[in-house]
Amino acid sequence: MTEIPENQPADSATLEDPGLDDRPFDPSAPLLPTGNLRRRQWASRLAVGGAAGSALLAIGVLGLVVYTVVSHGAGALSFGFLTKDPPLFGGPGGGVAPFLIGTAILVALATAMAMPIGVLVALYITEFADRRSARVIGGALDLLNGLPSVVIGLFVFGLLVAGHEQSGFAASFALAIIMLPLIARTTQEVLRLVPHNMREAADALGVTRWRTIRGVVLPSAMGGIVTATVLAAARAAGETAPVLFLSSIFQPKVSLNPFGHALPNVPVSIFQLSEQADPAGYTRAWGEAFVLLSLILLASLTARAILARNRAKLTR
Image (cartoon, rainbow, N blue to C red; front, top):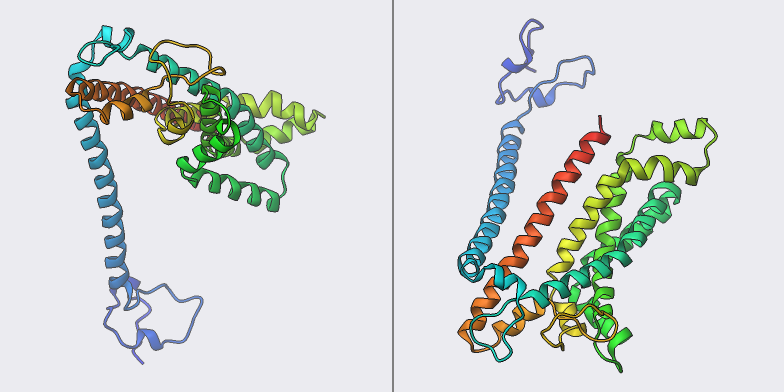
């Protein structure tokens, strides 16, 4: 058996030494590299390179999509395009004001339904539920988050629209289901960042649990909750499948009532224009896509900046 002198440094042992694997276990002996070190280093470099390549590929695809939409839709953008009604019989000109207003109403109503429930679910998981209940509820949220939006649209269609007329409320209800797990999961992570000693200090003062949540936990995590809501709203604004089932038969004019009839919205308008054989309609579709993409990107970047600032504040 090959012996290594005591005064020889650990890293001077060669990887090819066959006697290293036959040495008896000695807890006090210095750590020495084994013959698998080089293979593990190559595997680590390969994994890191693959992850970096995948990230660059995702960024490249996003950049290609943004470039395509901007190059095709920027020419249609103007002040009148954002403030006028669409033309009655097709052709050039007109705007997308009814679709923007309708999308804003749908997303606002969905946010009003999803945000309180999502925050309450996150509070229950973080502050009250035991480990088993938290695991079950978390799994249900993950399953709901992974559910295809077309399935949610069909469910709400059978629940609220079948036998009735389409309505903006039905579309908002479907969007609220899509937003709920996003808000709940992100809020849950933000609540976990609130220092536990703040809760302990409130308990030491004799403050009730619910008052601690209202006066200490929620104010500290409010920035993250708002960020989660903005991210969920940005995703809901671009959903097409649910609104095709629930709010696609509409008059292209400004309407503020989501309960009586379907509301015009941008995703359905883009779909309808892309199916027509009118070149002017293609231009308007690209313009609407550019506006929608700009709003979603702006909301996402703003929300992530607020979330990063809130996390830094909570972890000080």
